[in-house]
Length: 338
Image (tube, rainbow, N blue to C red; front, side, top):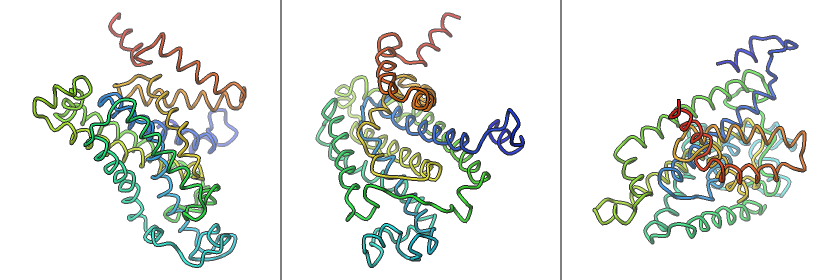
């Protein structure tokens, strides 16, 4: 509530005025918080350490990026109303079949959820049916992410190659550079994060939530008692992937670009650090960890760019040693002592 007031109602030059750049930065932090929430759902409550959620985030981002590219029309550098600039540059003569439909916002919204969800369903069905778990499952998710990164780097895939998708003009007819549009995207990020938090909380407090916690703590016992362990794992894994895809879709219009670097395994590892520092199996801890670390990253990369990675590693080590339950655990201990 404060951010829109300080950006739209407080005049420029006033000490309390928030620049549009700051609003966009905060909006991106909220997208990261949604991504951390999705990871906490399966890691904190289901016990699956996924090192591949960066892939689901990037797939949702690419779906939104394809829609935004289709909205450019003949305003691109080459003035081609049908083909994005990078396709004209690469001498493509027609739009690939998998780009059709992305000129419609409704179809794009469906793909933002469906593509990451379908990939998670296929991967999860194969992995959980084979009872792959622990570090082997983590390695497989990381390998999946790395394979997708290599594929999207190829120009012939039709997703912009190294440069990815960028130079977006508008969203639903609204100029993406306008202050009001930036504020609307920020508000959309706030609402989506809030609704996703309520969804995750509803899952955790339901019978499904009790089952996945039982699977996390004693999977063999839950299976021997006759519970559908694989089905529960698969359902939560797909929901988590869909939330990650939505986070990526909200991120792209605020960042102004999506490229294969979002698939980098390091990004998925960084998400784990957010959740660990904030506090596993709390949901709000994951949100707080994502906001805190990304703010610190922005500050360090400006003030001390050469030490950021060392600071991130040190933060993770210190949190593991002194705050094994993260910041949320510290808050819980304070409440108990009070």
